Image: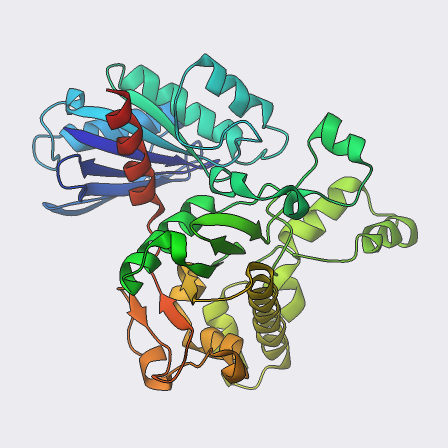
Amino acid sequence: MYILVINVGSSSVKFTLYSREHMRPTANGQIDRIGLEAATVHYRSGKGERIFPGADIADINDGVNLISELLTDPQAGVIASEHEITVVGHRVVHGGEKMKAAVLIDEEVKSTIRACFDLAPLHNPANLKGIEASEERFPRALQVAVFDTAFHSTLPDNAYLYALPHELYETDKIRRYGFHGTSHCYVSRRAAETLGRPLRDLKIVTCHLGNGCSITAVDGGRSVDTTMGFTPLEGLPMGTRCGDIDPAILLYLMRQRDLSVDQLETLLNQESGFLGLGGIGTSDMRDIEAAMLEGDPGARRVIDVFAYRIKKFIGAYAFAMGGLDSVVFTAGIGENSPLIRERVCAGLEDYGIVVDEDRNHRPGGSIREIQHQGGRVRILVIPTDEEKEIASQALELVSGAT
């Protein structure tokens, strides 16, 4: 029996098939440019890797049907029939206040996902399309939703409330929700395993640093604060998103430059962050680091600001939790940039955060500790695996329900 994990975006779908017995991936892949000309399909299994450029995939339904065909293909497939898939786990970005854990999908759950369309317009509609396509293609399988916001449902009200008129929370549910929860949950669990201590006894700051970035304070296995807020725009600077700014800047730009709401949204989400701050035509941290080494002042500016903001949140969360046992770096930048990790931890020796230069520069790919021998705080680099976390939560749910 198998668990299929599906992660649907606006024009893409990632998928991984797990054996329920061993919880190991047996096949995975990604379909890009759905609904556009020349979609591309990447498919990998124990039988090798296959790439199909120029595929004709009109919508998410076509994408899910293709996934089933690939997995059951006589030559490339890994299962004899789609009926061997007994559980389908879906990543859903926003569950609002109602969804606090993985759930079996029914009409009420789908209604809640729809109710959050305005809060996650680029994600929730696509997530729901993936669910409906899977229900049609895999009618015998249990469909499970795992929400990015669920891990942050443990935030106390002093962390999730904004200092706005309280009626805006009561009527419109304007509050901090947090995102990347599946990743923060996964790496905090793996950190506890690596440290050989119960998660309930640990105070951990997890740093998910990629094109999107967020930091979470995990106290005893519970998210107690996180940098992303009402939307994924708040918090750290990111690839093209600005992160925290003075909200009066928006009023100033509306008045002085006559910017519309749509123009402001584009500015904040697509033209800011590393791209806007650096001014060198890229939001890719690999390119920015290379430019900095060549002396580009814009690239240096990005790295200085980014590392400082991460450092500031780590300090704030350590104080908020009343201590710190471990800092975890994950996602594309967190896992692969020794420079960013070094810059973040520089000057924190008196607080027990000391990076070992040799350990920090060793090749990645697996969990590793990078703190100096004398450092009290354990500094971990943990490759995130949101698909496996979704599969694990889905299996735990259905096992308890049967």
